[in-house]
Length: 180
Image (tube, rainbow, N blue to C red; front, side):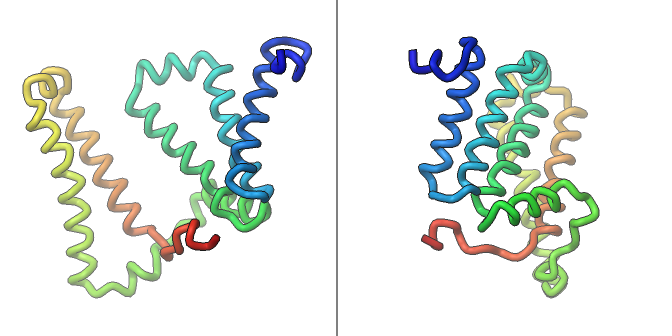
């Protein structure tokens, strides 16, 4: 009954209840508009998934790509949670969407060549080793269901993403809960 009171149509009432719930979850994390924005963003993501049936079909046909896109959407949604103000949250969202805003981290450029080489080699080796360990443990089912070319393509893509993450990783920040 409470849901029906939020809107003239049951679907509109559920939508309003969903967004209100997520906004309240944002307020639960902190009394700031950035937390409300965080909650509303995640509420809109859930609402979008419910309202657009093609998203459900897409995630069934391409589960790994859908999981990667969802991870990116959720990570993008954490920006307001970390931001100190709404202005900073929108500014950071703008930077995240601007491909020309990325630059090689000064910390990476200051590393000695031995340290940088070791770091990149370790990240690359770990990225390669984990899927190979998984494939070796699930040999019977894995190689029957996955073509080697597809596996190598995903392995190369994952390795490249880890490499780029390290290369473009900028300054480290203090963990958010240490600020309270």
